[in-house]
Length: 236
Image (tube, rainbow, N blue to C red; front, side):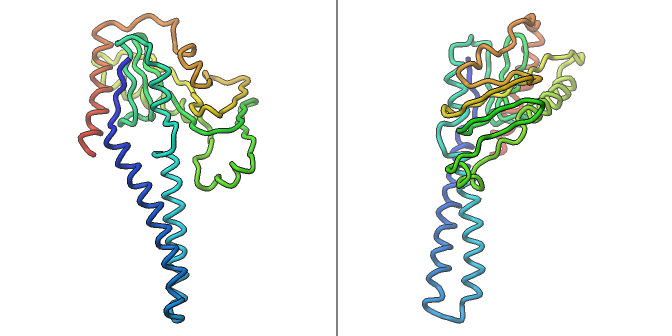
């Protein structure tokens, strides 16, 4: 399995996240110290405090997204490393999902949730058990949202794009699935319209019942997916 990712882009976003976190803290410090030197600067101090708090929280939020480990792409790479060289895993390209796998028989949209905790799905609704620690971090961490809806949306967009990009307009099978990548995640799923699993069971949920794509079709899909990864790297 070949993993395709622009590591420089990830590192750059991580650096920006860290800079925003530290910068926000420094602005907060200045806002506290400023009135000590000049009592007339209380208004400016309050404004700086608001800016500093917002900047620090934004930096921490994106640091949780781009810095905090385990990273979802690393987890996916680890779980899929035993697949053949005909499998190509694209991370953070111009595709409608952060992680897309090209398999010999299909394209797989992988919607990841990199959160610790207990999650359940039933009757068309997601639920999350909020611990005290999670509640305290809630503002500066990503939220669960509806990963099934996100995966199906990405599936539809990618099917349209592939249909327009592949000669002859051949319908390419695109399969969505949701993967909880954090090692401390626990899930209970009932009645999901698409596969939802922990990272350790990802391989078992890849489509295995489909016929292989024709060689020319596979090459055309690979070229399109490669172009989306290359185009983004060229813009960074």
